[in-house]
Amino acid sequence: MAGIAHDMPVAGDLAAVAQLTPTQLKVMHGVHSGLLNKQIAFDLGIAEATVKAHMTALMRKLNVRNRTQVAMAAQALAQDMVGVMPSSAPLQA
Image 1 (cartoon, rainbow, N blue to C red):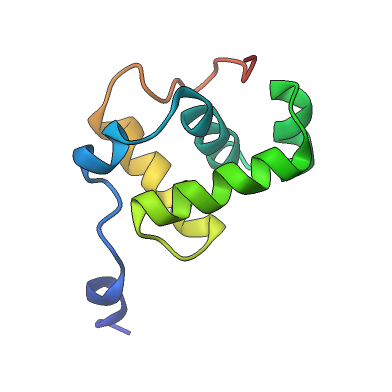
Image 2: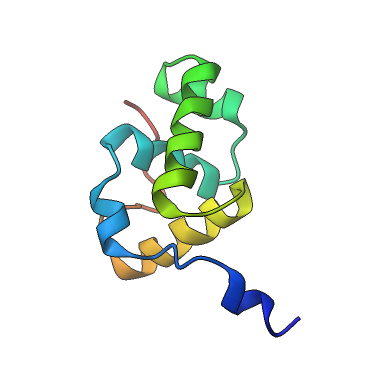
């Protein structure tokens, strides 16, 4: 299992974060908080299908394969970038 970490894409790249839209950052925060797409959609006042589209874009831009890796990227970014991923701020659009 030691090789798995080396196979995972580097998601904490600041250049990748610069490509994210404000809404994508909010969706990423929702994923990091453990919310379902439906919950994120409700909090942001958008359709669940729109959240799914943002998730697809997030995974592509961050070069990750699944929701867990998006959450891990959010955690790494929260540690690297003060204010981008506030830990207790609501998701309101």
